[in-house]
Image (cartoon, rainbow, N blue to C red; front, side):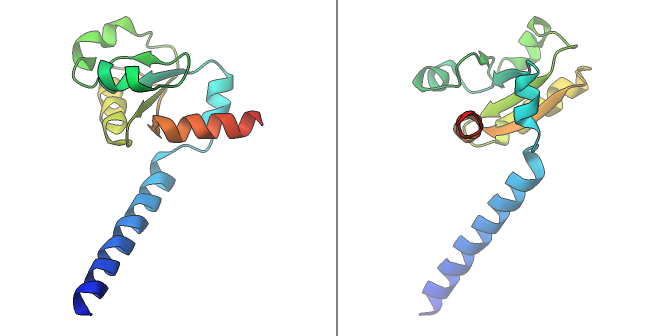
Length: 121
């Protein structure tokens, strides 16, 4: 019984952390940015991207962003996405270090895609 309580406590804690993460990292105005021609920057690997992605997104992986950021326009607005939202936070930080001023974390690409489709309906 004690082990069951411990497992339930761990699951509850993980869920709360995830919800707080979503609340703090995902900008509620992402849909407005997308309407204003923000570029969705998918930072997963090419293989992950090929398995599914948001239409029109650009794929530059976290592993290559330090070399390939020069392909991006620092004046444009970017929304970074990945599979769970962790790599996108890292790329957001890297781009801001490189002088990009309009970079936002979109979290998991599938979550952002769902938000985009919900707003269209």
